[in-house]
Length: 148
Image 1 (cartoon, rainbow, N blue to C red):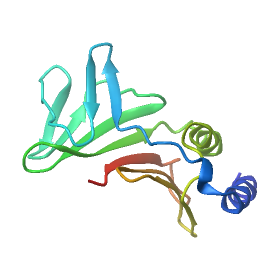
Image 2 (image 1 turned 90 degrees about the vertical axis):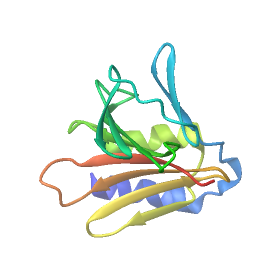
Image 3 (image 1 turned 180 degrees about the vertical axis):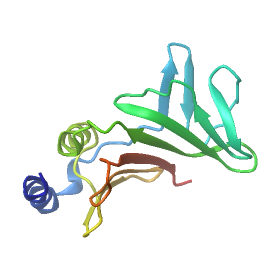
C-alpha cells in the first residue's frame, strides 16, 4: 500500500497547484444543521457533548466517511477547526484521490517514517488528511482549520 501511495505522491508533487479549488468551510450534520469555520458554534445537547471548555464531540458524527467529528472553538466559541476521525477500513489512497478530485492538487505532502500528511491550503482555510503509519490500528484523520 505505501509503495502505491508513494507513487501517487510523486505524481501529486510533480503537478501544479494552478487548478486548486476553494476549500470547503462548512459541514452539514443534518438537513437543517450546519457548522462553519469562523462562525459561532451553537452547542445543543442533542447534537454534541462538551468535552472541555472549548471542545465539542458531535453525536453520531458522520460526515462523509468520518466515524467521529470534534469541533474546536476559541474563547468566544467561534469555530477554529473541525477534526474528523475515519474508521479502520477507510482507504487512505482512495480518500486522497477523492479529495484531489474535489480540492485540486495539494500544496504540500509530507511522507515520514511515521506519518503521511497531505495538505491543501487557500487564503481562508487549511485542510489536512493524515495517516499514522506505525499505528496498531489504521489511524486516519483529517483536520479543517480556519486561517483567518
